Length: 587
Image 1: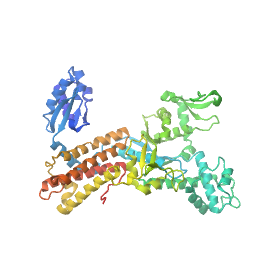
Image 2: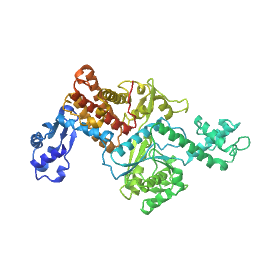
Image 3: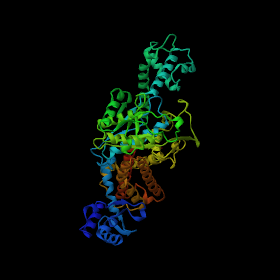
Image 4: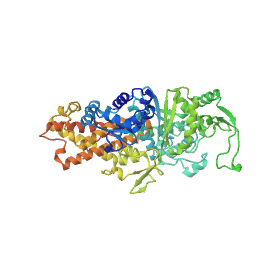
């Protein structure tokens, strides 16, 4: 339709420069009462042509009225033209869907661009919990979405297996190891002997300690299962615990339908000298200096100690202040480690890096963006998707405890209770940067208020119609390929055309969601398509002439089966993005 609009504009104004034509848009209308689509052509061309927008819109409307696919073209507002398509133009979509199947809506807009989507990236110090779940689902759905529009996507998990937290994990694992050997030390006695105390006390480490005892016997313990010299055991226990916790993490993610391509180790990155290389690069570019930062906001002279640090000139790249890379004792900051990690991503070929972070990392975006801009030598880009907190409710009340984890709701608990599909779809029913409530009672209810049930039920209804049709008409007559040849002229009811109009928007929805990095738009689309289909189904209950299978009218039946099969295909395409299995039967 845009091609028709541009052609009409060229005919009316042959001297328009190409850059004006490039600004012409044809977009869906927000209100179906205004037609199927609208164009801004008169508005963008009026000033360069020295014409009034309304006058030019009327001229374009008259020309577009002659386009065979257009039922009506009308001037609207200050210079828009609204277009309503003929049913035949809408019908042409169905064979395209049936021939493409779940590939309908794919594109090549991202072809040639290598994207690294990093998400979850939890410390390997405990089970996956509800706090990790939303980022896991959003990151995975976003990666699927970008793949659908042609990007070369790598799904990555950054394992934070370096630093004080994994040392604390090693000590906690060692205590469970001593317990497995029959130590007489109480938890508090052990904690008093540990540098920094016993930080991880959850029972989830009991089987890890038992596995360590089974693997090493008493070789790592002191006499009578007491604490041995940490130099004898700390590194091996740390590595053992990380391996076990990472295996548990991968198992939980797999249960959620998340399988990442790469697990990058922070420990290995640092051991390989990545931080030194990144700092050296910044040094070569004149972006490192020794200096003293101003006191942070809210600090008073009494609690602020000015000290010389190695600083990165982050303000040259849009950050508020320059950022320290090394502390006064010479050790690296976390920021320096993160710079090295993103430099490593670029070295591995990432042209676009998208990190999915929790809301508590929002203040970190500007400094990380500055670092990537400073290091990028081939136009690499960095973006962040923020995921806000999820509150889990039961009976309208927040849940704060889990019988297995003590202080948080584990991901495996959640999946066990409501199922993977409910978890994934529900996590996408709000924009990621908005807080959400996950109501355990709602996500298992078989009502319209439960989005995943409502959408899966639409697919199940499609499949039930097609199974019945196969029994009555023969399987060969109801394949997608056969239905793509159906005569669709009988699809004239407004509710039938509404379903087709919704499916027309699918490719555009995919493109827009990918561009905005907003996979929740796919869940919203699926819910709206399901609503349109359920409305059509319910009309058939009230009016027998609208039922899908009409034994006395084979032509009408084949047309409606083509519509039903198309709906099923588009639903499956959407499910493949959000990571939900299409339901075949929900009796």
